[in-house]
Image (tube, rainbow, N blue to C red; front, side):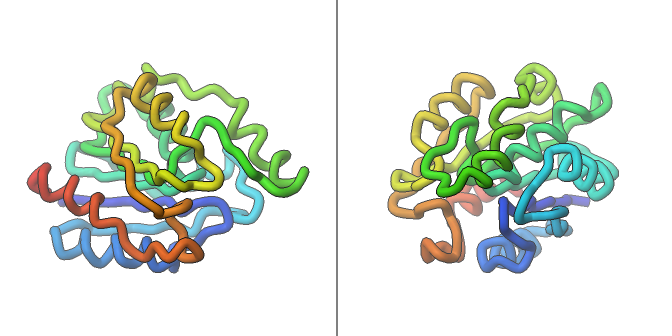
Length: 190
């Protein structure tokens, strides 16, 4: 059974139009789709989000697809690095992933982001648990500079897709769908 897990971002929810569109489209391609409500989405904590993913994704396999948005990408990477030896997921798609951030507006936002920015992610532990990582960036994301694309390519060998004028891929940016995700899936025969 093909399974997909979509992890929303900071301040987000499973009900966001993009996530619901992905759920519908992946369902048409035979995926059983789960979009967990991540804990304390307004002030995400690494340990809480990692625990939620561990509770939600009980079994992973080559027919498992993980999709994250923004801080949800960080949560997925941290989940992967802690998986048991020999466990693999088929594909990881990261939308607006980051190791660096810009333009956070308040001291509180920086305090929330700091542990995510400063707590190491071990590439080797992530890479042994997935067959492929694809990272999707926008050329006008106010928070995620394109320097991150190079970091994901270098650290994870990620295939990079650059979208035009999608901002941070939120409803406020007018983004309700990302067809490149489906193109990735269709090319893979999913």
